[in-house]
Length: 261
Image (cartoon, rainbow, N blue to C red; front, side, top):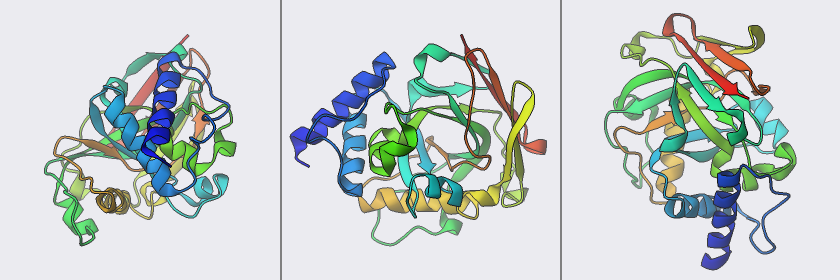
């Protein structure tokens, strides 16, 4: 892709997000053909949209998600400040094309994780974490057909992130066995999915290390104060207009979001 087609694709996605309007596809010549194309569009969106960056997300951290999108690897996404919410959150359903929800472990960084030639390890990453949040990622994409859009279009579209809802911070998270920690997702009081921290690339911190290294290859680092959500542990479910989703993390707390009609 050329700089002009990358910019055109990014602006198309920004406009669609501002209007909560679905796209059949990107304009001719603006469809990403490689992982680098899709990341370049996402980066251009961040430059053009005017929304402060709150942090990042990681998609396709589970075998089921990778099978759905016909891929064998995760993908990065950006989370912007206007779409970062605190639980219990109430957001207008009209702001979204679809309201998917996923229960996830999120981390706030205490120190920068800059780009560097050598890969970051899970241990090094853990030393730079300030706290953990129980979280619900809101999944939304500007494309009419989610799975058919494919991983490259979804990566370009900020990783299909519609928003992120954070519960109360957990400062003593190192004492928690995150691999075994369970999340139960409910919609309107009925259980719709459950899973453990190991769903996210084996451990949420492995997912965080994957993101740091993926960004590093393109010259980007993570910054102190940014929040990273590390991938679904519960699968994705859709919430109807007016409905409430709640993710119960047991002793780590609960997080909820209502999509007001």
